Length: 439
Ligand code: PMP
Image 1 (cartoon, rainbow, N blue to C red):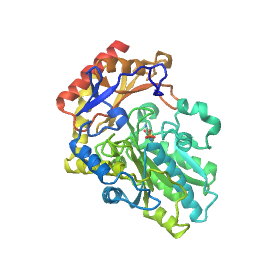
Image 2 (cartoon, helix red, strand yellow):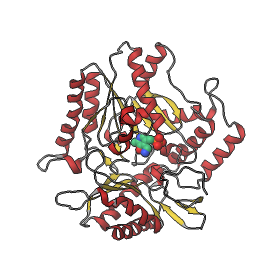
Image 3 (cartoon, rainbow, N blue to C red):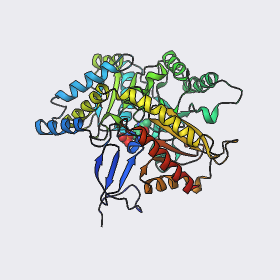
Image 4 (cartoon, protein in one colour):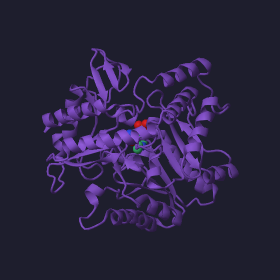
């Protein structure tokens, strides 16, 4: 009998014993193509020699040093590398252990920033309905996924949720994509004015929405308008790139494609590529300066901040990505994956939308293409597809739900950047089989 508390108590998952490039191998020797990188984590595959060596070297040299006393070489080098490549005036990096810790830290940093500047009345956060920002209480409160929030609602801080930028569902027929984006962004200004113009501390959003709706990028101009609105009212822009950052969209940082820079940027998953648990929050010079000039201490922290082995792994991941041109490869292979998906499913009566950027792709399944009506959530279609694909040896990330919070059934694909043309065929063939079997 297993003593591991599994995700689903009735599940009896196979045991993963090894990794080989884009494949995971279970105890019976069955190979699974990791078509979603877990959940957009394994961007370098499962057996990258350089990252493995970096982890082994670091753990032998220095396993741990508490950041209350000391910094470490890999943490310093990784922060330099990230800042050298980061957008705007992001200037400092706060290393944590994962995505929720990064978004939770961002919420607290935003609050402290306004306090240091003598604006204690700024306490509201605005986020979007179609979003996920993590499972700790602050991050969960920020996310708009009703299903994940429901049970914990009495414990959550009050955060407003405005409309997402979800072109496939919300753009009117006679509206241009640009006009739609401006209309969606207007929701932010309206909400700031409703709450009180100097009472909002931050707006949080994913540049490309991941876990709630399968790789939905904003339309052109949306985030530029969001940036303008934030600046107009002194509201900090927090971008959550936990899932879509680190090369996943074909840009090192997803917001590069939108031509905006945030005040705070959260990254995780692809940063450690699964070799170590790590996340990070990058903040602007202005925010850091306010803390430095004020109390001099960010009132937050975890034991494993800047963990030497985790930062050494991430340093090797980012170097590998940059040295081997893998961000560019994510862009190129992403286009090929999109074409292959469109070729196979473009005319499928139950595929409403195929979208995304780089190797971050989503398929939205609908009962009716004309009306874009989702399937009845009771059918659990995405889950059925996940199961059928898994049996066929393909791991893909399913999402099910209703319009509010999570729209319909989606499949997210986020394979390792090292995948080949043949492996794109393997994804499409196995997915086709799984969809056919599940409908
Ligand atoms: N933000 C986003 C956008 C995410 O996709 C996730 C994880 N799916 C998180 C935050 C939370 O990250 P973690 O699971 O590492 O805590």
